[in-house]
Every structure is written in C-alpha cells, then in structure tokens.
Length: 359
Ligand SMILES: *Cc1c(COP(=O)(O)O)cnc(C)c1O
Image: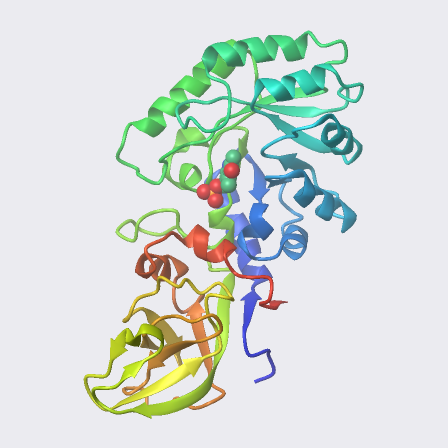
C-alpha cells in the first residue's frame, strides 16, 4: 500500500458533506467554521481551504490567524479569544481579523488604539458558562463604551457559549439562550451567535444569525451514543501498519509493566503508533482497533511509538497490513469512551510527526 506507515487521512468530501448538513440544519444562519487547535487535528491550512465555502472561519489565537493569512486564506476570520496587547490589536486590524472582546482589558486596548474604525467586534456575553465574557451589567457597560469610542468599530455583534448543550434534557441551555436573547434584544444587537455543534443540532433557538460548529464539521456527533447521530461523516481516519506479528505463549505478558497476560497461546500484532503520535496512553486492554474491517483488542500499555493488539482470532493479519485507530470504520467517539476522554481530545491530540494526507 502506497502510504506512510502511519498517517491521518482527511476527507475533504466529508468536510463538505458535514458543512452541507449544518447548513440544512440551520438554514437561516451563517456558518463560522471553528478551526482552532490545528483544525481539531485535521491541519489548519488545508482544512481552512477545504472549508472556504463557510461564511467565516474562527480560531482561538492570533498566531493561528496569522498562519492562515500568510497562507493566503482570505475568508473572514474571527479571533475567539481576541487580543491581549496593543501590538496584537494593530496586527489583527492590519490582517482584517474580527475580534471577540470578552474582558475589560480588551476594551481598554480598543479605546487607546487608532485602528478600530474598520473592526468587526464580537462582544461576548457570559450567560452562565463562567469562562469568558461579560455578565449582563458588564455587557451593557462594555457596549456603551464601544459605541462611545471616537472611532467606534464598524460593526458590533454579540456571542455567547453554551456550557452543556449536548445534554438535551437539562434546563441550563434554555436559560442561557433566553438570557442572551433578552440581553441582545434590549441592546439592539441584531447579529448574534449562540450554537456550537451541540447547540446547532440540539436546540433550535441556538440557531441565530451565526452558528459556530467545530466538532460536527469533522464528522463527530456531539451527543452521547444513546441519541441518534446526525448524518455526519468522519473526516479523519488515523491509520497505521502492522510491523510485526509474534506468538505469545499462555501465561506470558506483553509490554511495559506486564499489564496484559495471555490466557491462551496468542498471536500478537505490533502496530506503529503510540502516545508519541497521539494514541491515548489511557487506552486499556480490550479497546478496539480495526484491521481488515475486523475489531481486534489492544493488549498491554500503549508505548511511545507502538501498541500491541491480539490477533489470535484474526489469523489473516500479516506484517504490512493497515490498521485503523479511529475513523470511518471505528468512530472516534467510541475510542474516546475507551480512553476515558472525549473525541475533541483525541482529534486535536494527533501529533505533528504524523503526516496528514488529504483526499
Ligand atoms: C471551540 C468553540 C466552538 C466550537 O465548538 P464545538 O463543540 O466543537 O462545535 C464554538 N464556539 C467557541 C467560542 C469555541 O471556543
């Protein structure tokens, strides 16, 4: 097979499909595609290019936005954490970035700057997440200050972030949405943004002028497995290769710490992928890996460059065969459950040493 021993394959068609599903679900909303953290591990620049049809892109930090602009990406680009210094503000304005303002210190920077007149500012309301943003009173004050600036921003929009939108049967999301709607209505801000992926698919009222999907774009359901998944396609497949197959007699152990013991004479395949590539070290004995479309079980501890699987019941497995750690045949959500974490963590944890191939 003509591919590196380990790689992630990214399907542009899946990204396009997922964007289309989001547009169908929120037909009145513009889509701000969230590509922070190396596009959740999918590759910042290539993913931005593949999602050029989104109405805007969003990243967390200035350096991510600068990389995109340097690569020639011209989409509207939102800095979700805004800027922290006057130099950053000047650069952001020069690069035509839209800024989230979530803290009084950022308001002060804007007030002291000469480069605010062309800006689009997203004022962030804290409606209960208690991470970033202004609570109601502070929001009104911040807005008044922005509007009173000698060179007010070209446009002031508002956003808030939902703390538990993936839990469709709790009140908190409705409360957050109604607080935000009351606040922005009273403030006469028409352009608003609420829903992340779970908000988009779980809460009609979270589909305001703009939606901000991350996870769903990459084909991952934001909901627990018990709830029907939206019609999304996984964009990433994390692939590796069998580099040796060995017999392990009953009673012997495999790997560091002798953390797995053979209860029968076993055939063990070693794969070229470890925690140094982004395979979670917390994957326990029994976690699934896909070889020849068959599930085989992780045995022993994941090491830096390798992990082992039990192929006793998969006698056709040979050196050189491909194995899927997660992707189109093995949902990353499921692997994340095994690793006691969330899909976000696995996706954005793929290390820089792993080549990305784009289909
Ligand atoms: C990361 C992020 C998103 C995207 O969230 P998903 O759950 O991945 O859809 C949206 N808005 C903000 C402010 C974010 O930080």
